[in-house]
Amino acid sequence: MSLRDSLELIRTVRPDAGTAAIDHEILAERASSLGAAERKVVNAIAALAEAMPDRDDRLATARQVVWEYFVQRELVGFRRHNDVIQELSIPREVLAGLGAIPPKAAR
Image (cartoon, rainbow, N blue to C red; front, side):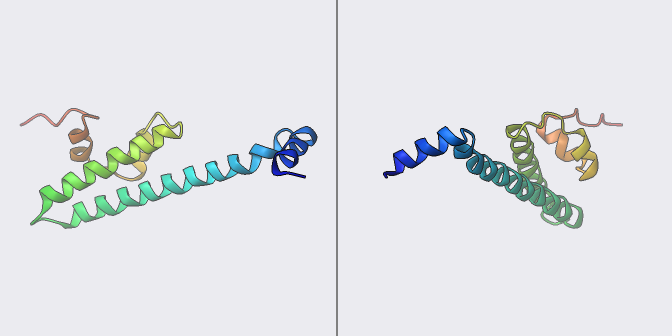
């Protein structure tokens, strides 16, 4: 029996069996990727909070990783970011650099 015959037999008996394992792997990879992106955000925000000499570089890095995280979230179907902005305590200056919120008005 060839591989093609085996796959046809599987599809005949359980049509969803052929894709269930792949679907599971895809979901697991999405979750892993999103988790990795979130860890980068947490690390970048922590680095931003402790750095003064190279603050501009760390702010640029934080903006980049937050933008990447938001894109990753949107790719997996999460369109709203308000909860994670609060949960991760993403600073206003990071969000303002992304155009997510207007910068604070000068006083």
